[in-house]
Image (cartoon, rainbow, N blue to C red; front, side, top):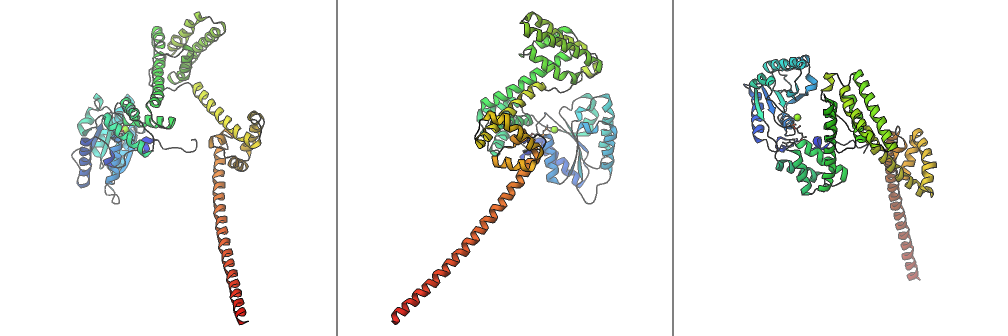
Length: 473
Ligand SMILES: Nc1ncnc2c1ncn2[C@@H]1O[C@H](COP(=O)(O)OP(=O)(O)O)[C@@H](O)[C@H]1O
Ligand SMILES: [Mg+2]
């Protein structure tokens, strides 16, 4: 898997043509009509605002239309145009008269305009208004929610095009067709479950389908439930951690910690992982870590002594103690994305590495006719040295033993990809060699058979002569 960097399905199955976009007939019609007026003359409104729930096909439609109608697409995300100067730069290129070589010109696409929120970004909003006024090209704006008061002026100047939330039937239709293209066994009730959960967000539905398909090799209801529920639980835990970290009062933080099924000694791992994301002020961090380490001391005493009375202190420290340490409000209430504890990922990785090691030991053991434990203690360390230092030789070994990519990586993280490349080269050489010998064998077979034929001809000649001689006699 490390080597086959796969394209995510949301990218792979992005609609290529307008026809492949499901539902949204009204939006399609409005948008295409508007774009088509640009070909003959400038339309009344030079900008369109596409809005609607996430994963309903807004970006997909713009891309498909640009492709089919031959427009170049100049696409920017909110993070690319935070400063007014970024917009002004776009405005400059797009206020120029259209070039002769590309008669249709470009579509300027600004995604996530509702993401413009801070006062710092308002300059960008002004600049967008100016851009819309002066542009020579169609300007397309996209927003999930266009109704915020700060966007009212923009709303007035734009052709408003609404995208509807996709229905469950729409979502199921797309999921089924992806299963068919991927030749993935896909149970109806599982597709139904994934579609139901997605609430019309096709992007998240496709991502879920991919996760289940990848993880289990087939999409069944039990697989989908197992995987997606675990993910929900993570989300719940993120919320709890967030509540704890942004608490203003001790009781808030403590109460939040009761809203998860995680044991306190697990929850502390999640807090530890995400604390530095939420609290960035060094003094805040110092205080918060101090509180966390005290909680940790309590936990180790509890486990050593079995004295559970101490648990309340540990929990107080890791919740209220941490929350009240974060004083810098600018950081404290900022929305940042969280991640599960590193230890959990490391544990999963260690488990995987162990499995690879076991499989590898079995292969080598059968070749060397010794036990797997000998291989693990005496042979694998040597193999590691070889794989780290001599990729060419390692490639030959790996090829001979038929090792998987993950085994090769296990043996040498640094040289792994180089070794795999060598193997590919060796394989090609072997293939060529095989083709050559096959060709030569064929050739020699052909020439030897002609030789035999000639010989037998001669023999017959002799025979017939013999007959003549005989008759003569
Ligand atoms: N109406 C639709 N028809 C077909 N595929 C869609 C549709 N809406 C979303 N998708 C799928 O979901 C992904 C995200 O769609 P996108 O157009 O980026 O959504 P939005 O911009 O509305 O958030 C696409 O790659 C595509 O696979
Ligand atoms: Mg989008």
